Image (cartoon, rainbow, N blue to C red; front, side):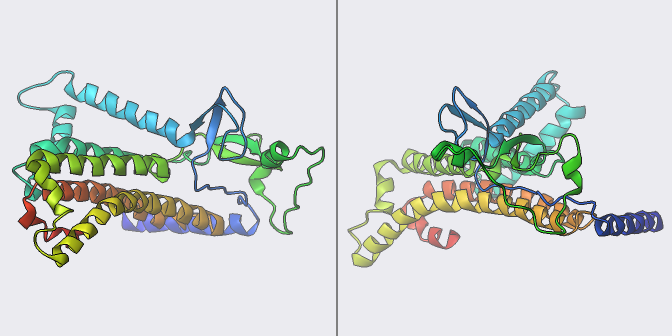
Length: 324
């Protein structure tokens, strides 16, 4: 079996080198930091990434709806015929949920029932969302939008001259029937939701808001002494102010950590596909699968830990700063 795998890999590598040498590759790979609107409901497009008017339906929003539908179907299929002794798909779902629940119990057994719904939802949603960016067609199939659209709206002109491509940069796939014509750029129909800063920021705000909610729920108004502690001297008052600042920093850290890692993964795959699109991106796809799991787990675990620390009395907060 190992020899067969090595043989097939070798043949594919040689074939890839030959295709690359004769110019069978794409030079118009595109990736955007911001989620691009696929359509502008009730309006028109201003640039590749914004609408001049109307409500933008972005590619990340479309993928988010698809991911939510997947979860709805999976949950419906797994709970349609609930049995005391689980079998089949129900058993698979229970194993996944129970594994994360047991893990959460190791962090805070006392309050796990309160923290688990949000943290588990965040983990599974982000895991699936991260993986969607690695599915063939996501980020590569879409609509062609004129690159001169922005200039035409800001200052209408009658003649737009596009820069000529450098010599030797001919795109083999440019002549295909579904390829974007010269002067247009691909706006993909689908994009990983977590590669959109709006999505990660929303989850970050929800997480930090719940951290404060559980803190007030457990400690009442005394929770504020964590931030405004003027009875134990200047040093503790300063520590409290730093703790208050850290609460806002968490929003940025939560949002940009997840967004940065997933977007960076997209960039790496695009660069590798541009340099040598045959077999070279494969190890990076495996690495990005690992990153997809780790980043989802990190967000969920950090939320769980900070929620647990927020419910502790003032004396139990000294270790929180080191948790950042």
